[in-house]
Length: 584
Image (cartoon, rainbow, N blue to C red; front, side, top):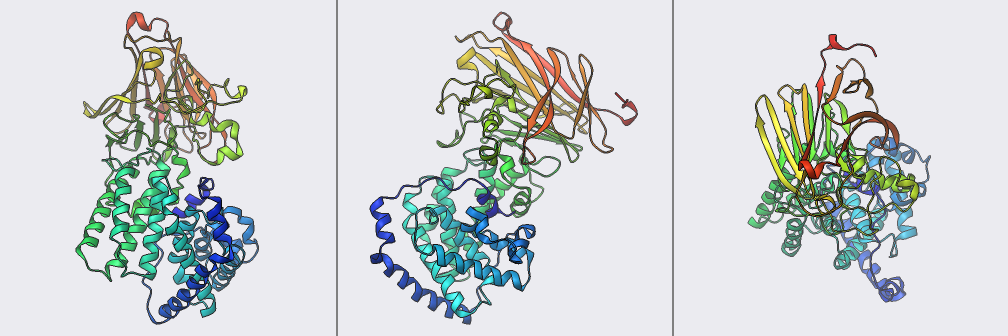
């Protein structure tokens, strides 16, 4: 699945605002002059293409398995529903290959133009326009270069019309991610059809938008992994378009723009590689599951030196420790001196959550919220966002940050749930109040503290992680501090460690749990010094659909927190030598 396919696999674009009067005008006969003018331009450009070499080739790949039924005519294109309008299937068909695929692709494009070539609000949403424009241009050399002139004119005319409407509707986009999406398509269209056009205004808008979208360390303002990767893909598209334009325009400004994009791409790439565990796939938390693995490989391989990995995103709020074959990543929550979540982003209830892998096997995971859950399992969607769905600590089953409250009473009881009082997104967002990262004796140490429970209980949660050199020991300590602030008296803290479905856990005594990894991989054991330890069932969706797994649960009584001012719980994961493994 490519970058564009990833965007298309999400829910349809958000509803957008356009007046009824404008809609009527655009559908009227009076507006048809716009289409006739584009037809003349399409014919002229087709003649230009016939005598000139168009230097655009597609840097992204498609999915041959998805392209096969389309390329052989087995599956009617209309059965793709929303994906039909995005043209991402062009890459899939090209990846499958063959002359039949090329012939069918042209037929599908002409069918779409016949049915949807006149403006309509839903299918001509600016985001859909941007997706179609990029797909049409980047795959042109495959399906269009050898097409009959009459087909070229029809397709190029549609491209010109769609590009014109996208530019008209830019001002109607209020989301910066959507704006960047549109800007990248417009810049690609300029590189394809008008490489000598003035782009100074457009590039100014692009970099102004990037200044609002990216933190100083290169992390996306939303701290969402899927949005970060999508944004990084747009930067690659824009860099590619600028490099083509530079062949026609040699002004120093374009060289400067390319250098600036290269710097931002390298920073974002280093952040993206930080989010990869031992299997080279992204974290499940913060919507990492919505960014497919092939996207990760394609985009990150192009994003700066492959060996450059950010270890501590000070603004983004993530830490990574790696040694031997072990990798652990912690979400430290947003920081006050950095940019907080963008206004339309979902709250982050995963403060101090960790994910941990050994070799290519994930051990500790997050439950894995992703977009498709809302449609397929709506009763799980909000639960998967909650604090209890992550490998971290929660107090009295309340989320560390306030998120939308599940409306069904049946959703509030399970251990995965987290209770909140409001139905609207409220300002209670966990903020990192302490962060420390660096080498320690015999390993590495990461410390993070957040205030998500301060307004409710006057409590701070601090987590310390220590990864020994060689990666054979991961130690942790969870500390709850009472600040003296007023609030409710908490009853209990629950520390959860969600285990990957391929990990089989069994409790050997009241302080030790044995973790058996698949195949011939060495086993690990979990130990804890305080609290009540138990093994419970859990649910994860990291493989794209809900499935059962296990979780280690530590229960800590907090009734004496105000008396002692702080309570500590220490725990650890230790890799066992093979000779120590005993059947249970």
